[in-house]
Length: 332
Image (cartoon, rainbow, N blue to C red):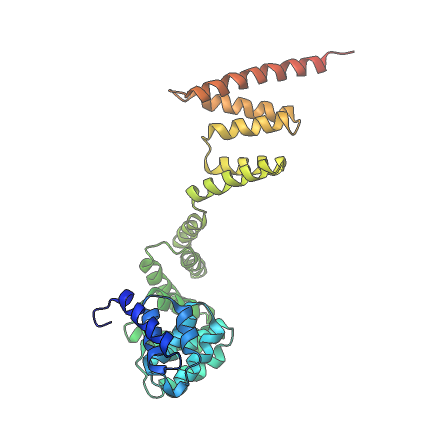
């Protein structure tokens, strides 16, 4: 382990553990090896039955954090509480426990630990962030804004602190401060956070900065649009899935949605037209989509043999549809 070769160390520790499963020291060393290799389930299984007074500070942390990394928030809260009761000045774990209670919709429980820590150390940014966020979730925006302001005075100008401070001030109707901090947060986000752009736009309109606000709101709308490349793939796969399960109306709807993201997809027009004519018996819609297919196909300078064949079939089908229409229009 001194050479950080956890692969070799794991082999030795496993053999030693098999020979003395009741040994606490080897169990802790094996758990440490697993922790460094991100095998968090093994860590928790090994350490949860070790008497708490036999756990080192580091092993105790690994036990609690292994549950956090497995997204087991309730178990993390349990073990983090035990750890904090034994090591009350472990600021990182106090902050984690405060946040964990907030995730469980019990921010008031987390605040007990965060505020108690603050009485002994008022400069720990991790704990102060967790306390500020807990007040925010309690909707105590006055208290939250005071804690975010304290963080800003400490130099904690992260996006979350600036954005949350701006949101607090907007809730307390201190709109000029809200504007200041939301604008800074938006810049830090690289002007990519649509929620911040939206909130900033609303604040601008409310403070009579109408043109600026309209700009932010337009940008928020653009940022909220789905990723075109992903939506192309999703809608195309949906259409195929619906078609293969004979849900033809839904397949056509998915293909049409695909066209909103990929309007030059010549094959999609062809698929829609074929589905209308062969499976849904809607000649009018079939004719419309065959015509759109041909219009796009004509613009392709070097068509593939497959496209040439599709074009010929589409023309034949349009001629057939016209003949059927004429025949139906002949009076009896």
